Image (cartoon, rainbow, N blue to C red):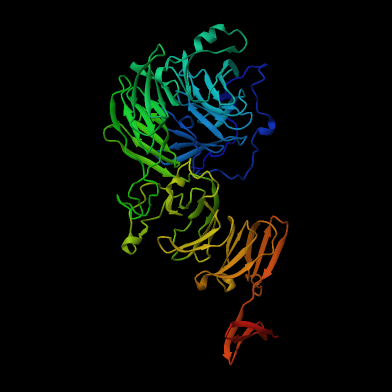
Length: 638
């Protein structure tokens, strides 16, 4: 799986397309020597990516020849083989986030667009996983890209503020035609004969004639010639997906609106027919010779005939939001009475294998076998975090632990804690409902062992929710014996989980701001403590042996505390004392020594005597006087 996972050495000279000896096009940028990867005997190779950063349907692509599914994960392009559950990767050397993808019809090449300032459109060799060419014709980001059916041309569309549509003859490294658009474009699709392409977006469906632009071109870039579709009553709609017909329906063009309408345009650009999808919204579209797939809200995918828009069927919905992986039946005790499903964010279809890949807005990936369209079955699925991943902790290898060995935990702004085992569980996990009897294997994700949901609000699991910046689990901590897992959230709350089902043992409103650090005392110290630090400049120390009661609060820092660490006896220094080290944004590091003491108290007449035993000395610290008004301090003795 790790073979050739990193963008390594360039392909042999015989495998690279020739470039012209003299190219005066300023948009084409060749790779300099500094950008060439350095050869090294020892390298860290990317083995697997657990996550996806798909923005819309333009970020998802399928190779019709091999069945590979491509999707972005930051600056990495993941090439997934669903049948084998294996990944390979293409790493963008400039480290810019990949925003759009498209395969060539023969599957040999992959084109990608980037987000950020001065992005590039890059062409990759899929087999060698190496870059072949690049062009820079946009300023603010690439919204969508597409190969022509002849593989000779690439069309790229910039973000809304870029407002540029460019056609690139990529083997020569030249932009042959370009023009401006007045609104944001969400999708692009080439006609089957490569003579034209269609763009769709906000109040925008436009047909661009590529043949006419090529006839006018001599040795420079010429303006693209385009004509708007006749939208009629739908001229104010937002079109979020478009696809040109194939086969017998090659003259048709299909588009979906965010309001949940499937529209059919004829070769004269007229809106000939439309169908209501009977959903709250629609977001993406995929078309083949036999089917039109429409990705809609609430996990719905509608299937229509491309000739007359006759409804065929609906695909099964994915998992419910808040699904418990340890419960494999049709019901879970924690599911709400009105289940909520994630919206479909992107779809792509492999007509040769009859497989439809769907990505939902909770960042889950499903591959459906639709060879029997009336009885589709799931052949692959994976669940990932839908928000920023803040922390990762490796579970210790202990005997009789709560989690499998070699597993690790992550927390995210989607209000979940997830337990991962990339190689898959070694055997059936114990089922907490049956007192330890084996439970069936996880049928939702092979890499995911457990999901702990913090709170009951499932809306944070969807990509568009939780944007206020106050939600999410910020930091994790695992006790050395593996019996407790601590989590601090962005509101200052501290939660501790334990038991076979990782139930919540205690919740403490510890801080006034987000928790930044958690640390358990090491096993060899003889004490069981948990320290938490926050942006509120406080450190709290809790005693595990006394139900996580507050042992002490420390307020020495004048800025946010960025790290805390316990130190104690080791094999090299067995006589070392237990210490707590902290550092913060105030540019200071504090060292504190932990000491244990014994104290007793008793009543003698009208006085309360309190004795403290600390180290080798005995002090009488406080003498309290008791009268009818209560207890008041009489004197302080040493």
